[in-house]
Length: 131
Image (cartoon, rainbow, N blue to C red; front, top):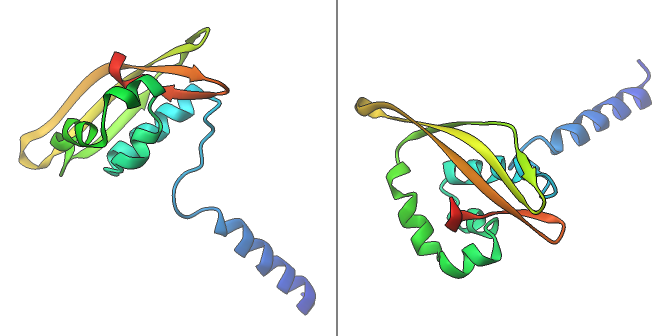
Protein backbone atom coordinates (compact mmCIF):
# COMPACT_ATOMS: atom_id res chain seq x y z
CA UNK A 1 0.00 0.00 0.00
CA UNK A 2 1.44 3.39 -0.93
CA UNK A 3 2.44 5.59 2.00
CA UNK A 4 -0.17 8.30 1.20
CA UNK A 5 -2.97 5.72 1.17
CA UNK A 6 -1.80 4.25 4.48
CA UNK A 7 -1.72 7.71 6.11
CA UNK A 8 -5.24 8.36 4.80
CA UNK A 9 -6.55 5.05 6.24
CA UNK A 10 -4.91 5.74 9.62
CA UNK A 11 -6.41 9.25 9.66
CA UNK A 12 -9.88 7.79 8.96
CA UNK A 13 -9.49 5.28 11.79
CA UNK A 14 -8.38 7.99 14.22
CA UNK A 15 -11.27 10.27 13.24
CA UNK A 16 -13.81 7.44 13.47
CA UNK A 17 -12.60 6.33 16.90
CA UNK A 18 -12.47 9.89 18.27
CA UNK A 19 -16.26 9.93 18.54
CA UNK A 20 -16.40 6.56 20.30
CA UNK A 21 -15.19 7.60 23.74
CA UNK A 22 -16.87 9.54 26.50
CA UNK A 23 -20.60 9.96 26.90
CA UNK A 24 -23.08 8.52 24.49
CA UNK A 25 -24.68 10.99 22.13
CA UNK A 26 -28.43 11.35 22.26
CA UNK A 27 -31.13 13.37 20.58
CA UNK A 28 -33.47 15.42 22.77
CA UNK A 29 -35.99 15.33 19.93
CA UNK A 30 -36.87 11.70 20.73
CA UNK A 31 -38.40 10.85 24.12
CA UNK A 32 -36.83 7.39 24.26
CA UNK A 33 -33.35 8.88 23.73
CA UNK A 34 -33.92 11.36 26.57
CA UNK A 35 -35.18 8.58 28.86
CA UNK A 36 -32.15 6.42 28.07
CA UNK A 37 -29.74 9.31 28.60
CA UNK A 38 -31.42 10.20 31.91
CA UNK A 39 -31.10 6.61 33.13
CA UNK A 40 -27.44 6.50 32.06
CA UNK A 41 -26.76 9.69 34.04
CA UNK A 42 -28.53 8.26 37.08
CA UNK A 43 -26.45 5.10 36.75
CA UNK A 44 -23.29 7.25 36.65
CA UNK A 45 -24.57 9.28 39.64
CA UNK A 46 -24.30 12.42 37.50
CA UNK A 47 -27.02 14.36 39.31
CA UNK A 48 -26.20 17.75 37.78
CA UNK A 49 -26.59 16.56 34.19
CA UNK A 50 -29.59 14.36 35.06
CA UNK A 51 -31.34 17.40 36.57
CA UNK A 52 -30.63 19.35 33.36
CA UNK A 53 -32.94 16.88 31.57
CA UNK A 54 -35.88 17.67 33.86
CA UNK A 55 -38.86 19.71 32.71
CA UNK A 56 -39.09 23.36 33.79
CA UNK A 57 -41.84 22.47 36.27
CA UNK A 58 -39.79 19.61 37.72
CA UNK A 59 -36.66 21.77 38.02
CA UNK A 60 -38.67 24.40 39.90
CA UNK A 61 -39.70 21.80 42.49
CA UNK A 62 -36.72 19.43 42.57
CA UNK A 63 -33.31 20.76 43.60
CA UNK A 64 -30.02 18.97 42.95
CA UNK A 65 -29.97 18.05 46.65
CA UNK A 66 -33.43 16.45 46.46
CA UNK A 67 -32.53 14.53 43.31
CA UNK A 68 -29.28 13.38 44.94
CA UNK A 69 -31.23 12.23 47.99
CA UNK A 70 -33.70 10.34 45.78
CA UNK A 71 -30.87 8.43 44.14
CA UNK A 72 -28.77 7.93 47.27
CA UNK A 73 -30.08 4.37 47.69
CA UNK A 74 -28.63 3.44 44.31
CA UNK A 75 -25.06 4.06 45.46
CA UNK A 76 -23.00 0.89 45.26
CA UNK A 77 -25.62 -0.84 43.13
CA UNK A 78 -25.25 -2.14 39.63
CA UNK A 79 -28.14 -0.60 37.74
CA UNK A 80 -29.66 -2.14 34.64
CA UNK A 81 -32.75 -0.97 32.81
CA UNK A 82 -34.89 -1.86 29.84
CA UNK A 83 -37.00 0.75 28.08
CA UNK A 84 -40.27 -0.18 26.44
CA UNK A 85 -41.91 1.53 23.50
CA UNK A 86 -42.68 5.23 23.91
CA UNK A 87 -46.36 6.12 23.75
CA UNK A 88 -46.64 9.73 22.59
CA UNK A 89 -49.83 11.71 23.07
CA UNK A 90 -49.34 15.29 21.90
CA UNK A 91 -46.71 16.92 24.11
CA UNK A 92 -46.58 14.04 26.59
CA UNK A 93 -44.88 10.67 26.38
CA UNK A 94 -44.93 7.59 28.59
CA UNK A 95 -42.16 5.02 28.48
CA UNK A 96 -42.34 1.80 30.48
CA UNK A 97 -39.08 1.10 32.30
CA UNK A 98 -37.97 -2.07 34.03
CA UNK A 99 -35.26 -1.14 36.51
CA UNK A 100 -33.06 -3.86 38.01
CA UNK A 101 -30.72 -3.20 40.91
CA UNK A 102 -28.00 -5.63 41.89
CA UNK A 103 -26.32 -4.89 45.19
CA UNK A 104 -23.70 -7.15 46.74
CA UNK A 105 -25.10 -9.89 48.94
CA UNK A 106 -28.62 -8.46 49.05
CA UNK A 107 -29.22 -9.81 45.57
CA UNK A 108 -31.30 -8.45 42.76
CA UNK A 109 -34.43 -6.32 42.82
CA UNK A 110 -36.54 -5.44 39.77
CA UNK A 111 -39.08 -2.62 39.74
CA UNK A 112 -41.19 -1.55 36.77
CA UNK A 113 -42.26 2.08 36.50
CA UNK A 114 -43.55 4.54 33.92
CA UNK A 115 -41.20 7.34 32.92
CA UNK A 116 -43.11 10.45 31.94
CA UNK A 117 -41.76 13.07 29.58
CA UNK A 118 -43.09 16.38 28.27
CA UNK A 119 -42.15 18.28 25.16
CA UNK A 120 -40.85 21.79 25.78
CA UNK A 121 -40.37 23.52 22.48
CA UNK A 122 -38.65 20.98 20.24
CA UNK A 123 -37.04 18.93 23.01
CA UNK A 124 -38.31 16.28 25.39
CA UNK A 125 -37.75 16.62 29.14
CA UNK A 126 -38.27 14.21 32.03
CA UNK A 127 -41.46 15.04 33.93
CA UNK A 128 -39.93 13.88 37.20
CA UNK A 129 -42.55 15.27 39.58
CA UNK A 130 -45.33 13.32 37.83
CA UNK A 131 -43.62 9.92 37.78
